Each structure stands twice: as C-alpha cells, then as structure tokens.
Length: 548
Ligand code: PEP
Ligand code: MG
Image 1 (cartoon, rainbow, N blue to C red):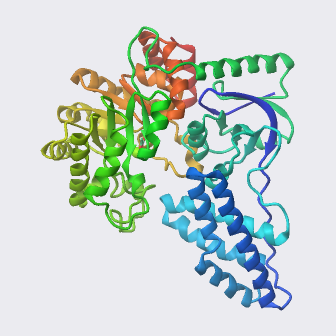
Image 2: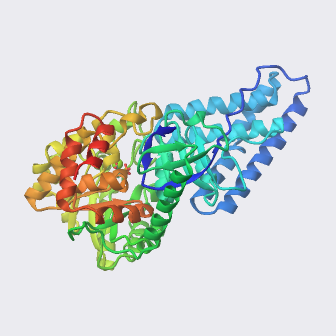
Image 3: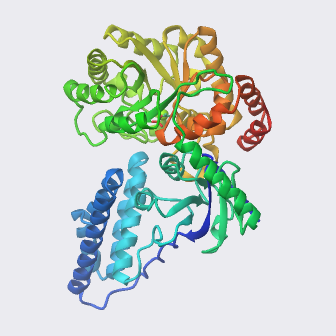
C-alpha cells in the first residue's frame, strides 16, 4: 500500500512508525472537593515542575530550541495566568479545569492578535497540556521518546514539538496537515530530515509499522517488500555519499552557472552557510535581529551586525533585505496600529515609508558596513507593489551611497509591471512564500488553507516567468529567495523560468546543487514549459518530472 503527500526535499528513510500521542482529553467541568488552597497548592507544584522541566530541556538542547523552550517555561510561570488559575479554583473549579480554562482564554486572546502572536498560542496549548498531564500523573503528550530510530507521524508539529525533536532518533516526518511552507516543512528543510506533509491517511498508520518515506516521490510505502527496502537503502547510501562530496558552485549539466546562496536570519548563521558551500547570501532577514526590541535599533548597533555578517563573505554577494515588519513578523516600533488583515496592511516597504527615519537609519548602517568590508553588498526592499515604490527605494538607497539596490517580488502586481520595475531596480529577488500567499489569497500562517500555499501552482509559475523574461530583456538578475528554491525539482523549473540565482536555507544547498547538476538549461526550460501548462500544482509537479 502507498500513501501520497507533498514531499519536502528528496530524502528517503526506512523505519518503524511512531505516532505522536493524541492530546489529553479536556478536563471535566467538575467542582473540586472543597479545599481550594490544597487544590491551588498542587497546581503550583505542577507549574513549577513543568517550568523547570522545560528550562532544563532548553539548556540541554541549546541554540534556537533553547529560546523556544525558555519562552515556554516562562509561560508556565506567568503571574497573570497564575492569578487567573487561582480565581477559577477559588470559584470552585478543579485545578486541571482551571489550568485548561485560564490557558484557553489567554490562547484565544493571542490567536485573535494574528500573525506571530497567534503562533505563540500553539506553544501555550502545549504548555497547558504538560501541566494537566503532570497533575494527572500521566506522561506529557508531544514528541514520543524511543531508544530506536523511528519515523514520526503526527497531525502536524507545533514549534515546541519541533524544538524537542531528538534528531538522532527521528528518521523522517510524516504529517497529515501542512503545506510546503508549513512549520514542519521549514524545519525538515533546515535540518535535512526527509519529510512528507499533507499525507492523507497518515494517522491510520499503526505504531511499529515499517514504512519507506520517499520525499522525492511524494510517497509513504506501507509494509514494503524486502526488495523495496533494499532499493531504498541503496538510495539512502547514495544520498549520504553525495552529501559528503565536496561542495562546489551551482551549475547545470551544460556548465551554466546558477549561484547558490544562503538565507540567513543573523550573523551567527554565516559560518554554517560558508561550510555548506553557499556562494554568498541571497536573503538576510534583518527583522529577525529586532523582533524583541521595543525601540528602533540605532545606526551603530545595526552597523555592527551587518559588518559581522558581511565579513564572512569577502568578494561574494550578500543581499540584505530592509526590515520586513508586519503581518507574521511585527516589530513594535514599526507596527503599532491594530489591523484586521495585517498581511494586507502596513507591512514591509509600506511600513518603512511611513516611518522613513527608520529606513534612513538602516540604509545608513548598511552603507557603513559596505565601506567597512570586502563583500559585494546588495540591498532590497520587501513587499514592493509597483514601479513607483521601486523608484522611491532605489533613489533613496543610491542617495545614501549604496551600490546595488533592488526589490523583492512578493506582491503579484510587481510581477505584472516587471519591465517598468527593472528600469530603475538593479535586480529583483522573488519571495515565493509571499508571492504564493498573495497570488492564491491564502494566509501562509493558516493551516486550513495550506493546500493553496503551493508555489508549484501554475499561476505562481506564470508570474515567475513574467519576472524572468523581464530580467532577461533588461539584462538584470532575477533571483529566488523563498522556500521554493529549496525544493530541488522546483528549483530546476524556476531556473527554466529565468531565475539566475537560488537562495535557500543552507541545509538544502546540497540537494539543490545535485539536482541542478543533472539537467541542462534546455531540459530545465522544457520542464518549466510543461509545468506552466498544468491546471493544478500537483499536475505541474508530475508534468515537470516527466518532461525534459
Ligand atoms: C518570501 O516571502 O518568500 C520571503 C523570502 O520572505 P519571508 O519568508 O521572510 O516573508
Ligand atoms: Mg516575504
């Protein structure tokens, strides 16, 4: 038997399934025995235990996971939440129910705020489940633990789950929900774990069933034959050998160079990108440096960060994006008004233009970093709608001394007027995550519309072609920096549509490099033509695979 889903990358894994335990049932809405103080005291013990356990796990995990787990630990000690729990227990609720209701109320509040805050709501639910499990004396739900390597099957993974994954044990991820830009997919790409998302029937797999998860083919083969297992193991060995092969510049089979660049969120990501063979940086998401800042960072602070990153890439290209604040990445010093639909609001360049001094400071800091290092600095604006906004940004950047200034193509309108945009912009970089969200009118944060969030959709590909054609006519570079560039088969199609560089999470560089090396430019173009003629994203995948 075979299940189908959307593969992330090209990895293959063979192993037994282990399912994520179901969430705990909702605590009964019953009254406690009468001793409110004793009830509250046991909740306090559980809160302290969970907070301590999360912090300790964070310390063991280190890195990004530590920040996620420390934030979760603090949620379990939040004084407002604790007060609310006490009020509910005093009014007669059991400890479990009070925790459930207090966390639930706070979760709804965050969810209503949308974007980044709504994502934190999922983390809050996870913390509440841990506290309730502790009160009941049962194991906490979440990522299962096992001494043997396994293939994790889950409805979807929350950020707190992914932070806890023991990567030495998880061979592959298979989820029922989620699209190619879901949290699970992004994690799988950044950690190089084979993954399949949107797998219908995944949750019917029983623990211990052996499966082959084949991301390249988009299949989960259930109870495979010995011959199938052997063949899968051979491919796993081939991939491991290819990953260990020396890195080199990105090239097609006919020698056409396609520089492979890295997406980074802080200067600390620089060394890893270099190690994995990135030929420069194609997207530095500067807003990630300042997500927790209450006030705008100073020119000096910014200069230090930019100089640090640029110094890892002497003689190479580094594309820095001006602050992309708003929607899923709000910055309190730029986005202070409530918006009903923040993704369609004062975001990216729009927000910067409304607070021009902040943009001015950032470009000034970048100019200083340009002068202080040997890197070839390119600067671009996010969320640009048309040629007028492009001219505004390019003129401002040039007047402040920046050498190479361009824009991101994330809003469909920009692709439709690409020729005019390229009259002033030095380059365009296509952000396929937002371009897909806006083309298909599907919120990239919303699981219920994840199926629309597929950059293989022919409507998205046709916009990429408009941009590629305009770039070729103007003799200017058109790169890709969205998640789509990290999908090896799609990367080939994007090159066939005219992309001149590809930028991605560094862990994906090896797979994309290997895939490009296997096709000529003519073959890439043939695959692109086939995909453009498809009716759906799934059909585009199949037609591209068969063409060329
Ligand atoms: C994109 O939208 O594709 C992109 C690269 O930007 P971000 O994911 O940071 O919005
Ligand atoms: Mg974007």
